[in-house]
Image 1 (cartoon, rainbow, N blue to C red):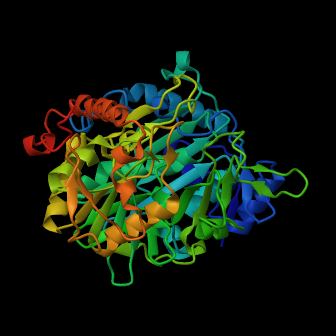
Image 2: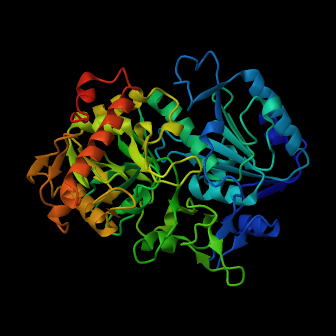
Length: 531
């Protein structure tokens, strides 16, 4: 039963006192009612709650700081991604945030992160917005009322979107701030309405604590076939991670964050966070049907009268999102658990149009491309970009979320791939026949066919050819895919132009890999060699 109280005594241990109403563990309908009554969001015609996030329509990685202490000073990979913050600065900011929240209503959720009982983490989310609390309720793993009554959180997230930070006072970079204190088990988020910061802050926590338990944390989606075969999909935003893992012929384990332990794979979450720009019922029916009452939709334009959402309208942002619990997916696992993977797919949306659409990787190549975490940003998608696509290398396919040195994760990846004899593939979900603006994006039905062949084992004995620049082993044929598509140079009108573009991208890989001086020599040698 939900508790509504004017006492903040239970939150005093995280510095929150003299609050207004404190709403504990409300149900979905209650949170929807609060969000609408407080003018935080509107109901769409399909029943989803639709909110706009204003200026910040995505994550703010440059505004994230980690408190540096004697306990973590030698563990964390400090730099532009993991920016250090002194404890005194954190404590000063925490006091200012606590003072701001005095007299204000907050919504509190107690939940789990991690489906494996041996490795799950009790967490608490304290949010100033009801719709943020609904977002967290649908994305994290629900506790029973009995668990909520007895649970003590290992980490607490406090989200106050309208509290704007002052860099001159708070020692931060902008009006938006995400501060992580591992020793205090506390995460403070201010100055942003983008709900994804709540989800990803806990992901960063799991990436910090789980390696100490011998669990490999992963930024990937996962599904399972009828025979119990598990497939993992690694990829950055826009590569098709959620779309390809949401397969009507396979059960979805999760769409974004997983751990790989001694017993197999487990989801960190209890929901999905899908991009929905250009979403269609024809091509992504499971995601389309999951967006209904209880779902939270961000920055999708709705008709002011009919409240019908327009998924093709990217006027607010291309990064439109929908958050929904896994049980709204018709074909998902009830427990978020799976065995050891038999297949891994590394997804790269290559806007230069030179990577083969499908390659079979050796363990050394798999580790190289996992560490590289390559995709491409499209021209014009960011204010400071030029007219050409830009390569984007994000270590381990999720640089902003990994606090430890990259090779800690890559060594765990390789060890598990070799121990469990996992097939690993590199899948280009980007362009063919030329770069962005010249060629065409590889069609989703063809990509689905390649993924299906890969996870089914249909490519285990297929003949391959070796790409002369990247050294990748490419199938000569794949069921339901034109053979000509599998040779990217042949899809270009100008073969010499392809060669130039391919050598340029290969050189970018080599330059980026210089960031990993402690990578194993055989892994370094597995990269492009025709640059």
